[in-house]
Image (cartoon, rainbow, N blue to C red; front, side, top):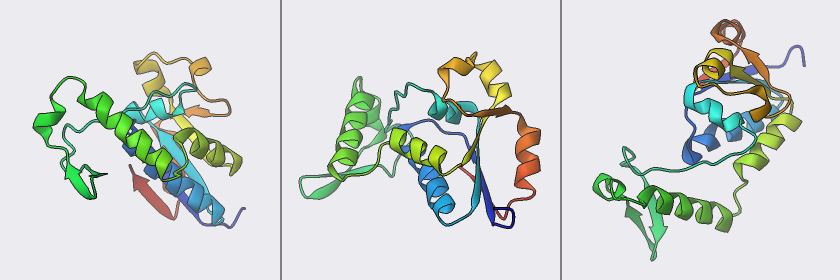
Length: 161
């Protein structure tokens, strides 16, 4: 699609709740005919690992509310500091995702690959955190910030997630 509009995103977060926006936006944009590039750096790079172990934390997430008992219950930071709360919040979020029929991150990644979304793993971050290409999804590109900047300067839409 030589003349198609394009979108690029920098993906910097690797928690379960932050994994959804880039993949949902990328697959939606690709289905609308946009050429999409995702550049995964720092903690966002974990979203490209073959084996995912994504978690949610309530710490620093004051807006986190979970539907329970017919209302929305906020998760105060103090509760998040208690041992086991991240595991509980992660379990609650995964159950809610399943209950509501929301696609898993694995499914969204597969859809992105099928839609030919360009996924670039930051080589500097790979080196920094000592990740090996065999730990990552097949079909990725490995490049640095200059490659992303070159792409972003030509994109119609640029997002930072």
